[in-house]
Length: 426
Image (cartoon, rainbow, N blue to C red; front, top):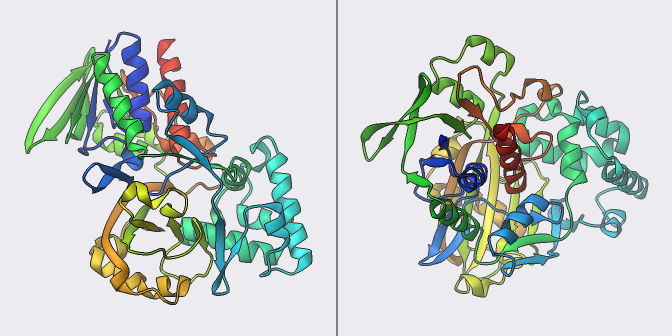
């Protein structure tokens, strides 16, 4: 068959690889000039790639590890156990082990014990089935108590979901706790290697990747499906036997005039927040830890991730690289601000992490954003998730909203692609 795949992220590229391996004719349409989607990268210097948004994998990310190995990239995949902390009360505190939880000074001893027991319970709970219809805030308060919830978990939920924090499904938070490991994997040289290797393999099997292709319309011309896209200011139309859209379902619906209203009613587009990252290249370290979850509500960013406190800075020309991440509503002014303005707004927060910080430390700065990075997953969310098939003949959907209850990530996109291709084989 002739397949069109919209989106060359982890999901689209993996699906394209499996389809070309089966002998299908596949064309990938990607709006960016670089593959990877939300895991896409940029060059901090010629030939030195870094992800636009902070990325690592966990020991439990078996699908990602298997694909990395399959593509001959096992050697640069190294495992680390970096320091991860939370910023509470104007200082950072480790919170990445049982011993750290028991020594977590912002909580009284009784609350630390309850926090440790609650985390242990969720790690052992094999499934989120019983948690799907529970709101995380209410459930976690009952399990771990008010002090632990307000100090540790409420800031995470508010930072991730904003005003919708109290509506988040406990199934999502279970997955966040259950599947994470203290060991973190990173593909030294950047995850760009993974997407470059996938692209090369797809092309090697006869597939085509069209970069700079902005899709606007999906329509049927029975028995085929047409996709209209713009490239270099020119509209083009491609015809396929089947089309896979890896865009958010709501975007796919808006592009498809023939999609029946009943489909949208059954699978309404979830609310979603945008992701924003300020990436700094510094001439010295900001902190001595990899991950700082920022649990103070008046700080201007949700997380500070000092990438070169896990990966040696020598791999980046002696640069110290720091991500400052946020999730915000699509109309937030942060998404319209220049990089210089964002840096100026974030300076007070940086000095709270390190009182010696000065703007003169900054050698380079970049900002990146993604509009549909974090769906707001409320109780009952699972009932609204569509399957791969749609009412439009030949059109299939597969996107990050379907990995629920797991958080968005490379591993779950790869796993979803494998399931999709098995479904298409039937």
